Image 1: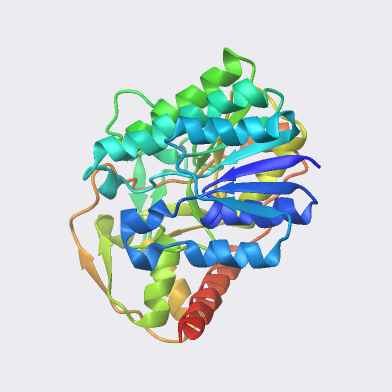
Image 2: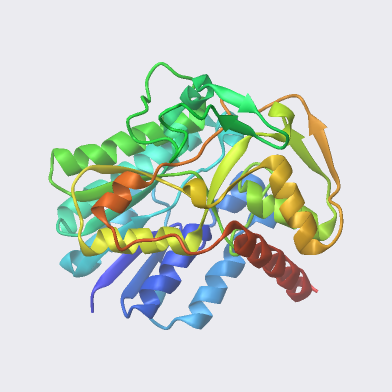
Length: 357
């Protein structure tokens, strides 16, 4: 049986990938040591998600492996060898606020951990497709130089700009910009994934995601804005909007649509590719618009306040142009609307609260 290795297998994208590939009939090997609880506290633990997957799929095996431990990673890859047909690498330290607290930890997880996985793949499964969940933060605050127009509920790109119709493409420079510590560690990982493709011929791709979201996200204050906003909408917990008048724009892609894109790549892999990946013009919103969506979904106003202090290096406007990926994989399409995503998040948060009793 062909094996798919998924890192961060209890997280949002990892768990979506586990379910997807288990249902395709693959043996799925998951690596996850629940470091999210260390990053963001016990409420962000993904242990519940791991247990859910173990109960649901007999062809899923969970391993408590730290991707920074090359010995452990190498041994696991050696055990499965060339039976590994794909590696879906979603494990990360995902917050630029948290990264500034412990830069060494951030870099060791995001950069060194990725290098460990690339080398283990090269040594033991060189024909496998290698999918890396990168981030639009590799562009740093470069998007903030774009000419923006203030509208009633959002910032929007000037209509005559070349990015206006479809969003930001992969030609945007990653140089001479403020990345944040997190952005820099992801740049290092991103470039290494490209290099293993171009230098060693590994079948690798970087998916530079916008906001990745869905009902299985353990949203926390420092990461997972839509999921955390949904949690606050359901529980009544206070939420603080940081800067830009609450009009900063993000595109949002549902985890199922993202994993569909991974699958398209895995079936016809290329080497050293880079793809901007997000909701694009299909699914995007400002903070003010997101709050309105959750208020409609819950039927009551949210408890939120505003602060002028934006996060360092934060984007004012980001919409991904996924045209390059769609040109390479024309059968792929986004299917889950933003309204459907918000409804799923509200339902999932409500159900988890009931289960916690």
